[in-house]
Image 1 (tube, rainbow, N blue to C red):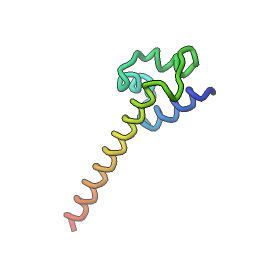
Image 2 (tube, rainbow, N blue to C red):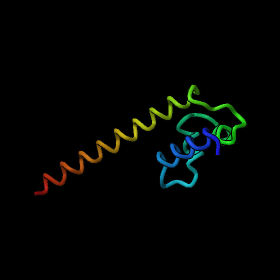
Image 3 (tube, rainbow, N blue to C red):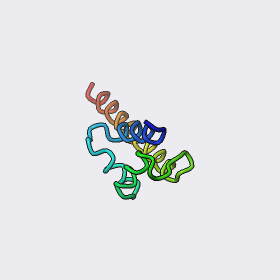
Length: 83
């Protein structure tokens, strides 16, 4: 597995752990064609750390992290309120 395939698999499965079609969802969120993700993964299209989609994926990770943190805070407040 090449570096692009490895990073796309790690990030895609982390962002969409319940989805078997994570490549299609990643493509949708990056606003690219699903074939682009597959071609990056296979090495047919160049994908490295300088690719613009890398910054977009970092932003997606940041957004998911923020959403999870907010959900956790709501749960903690709900639990404390119930005591």
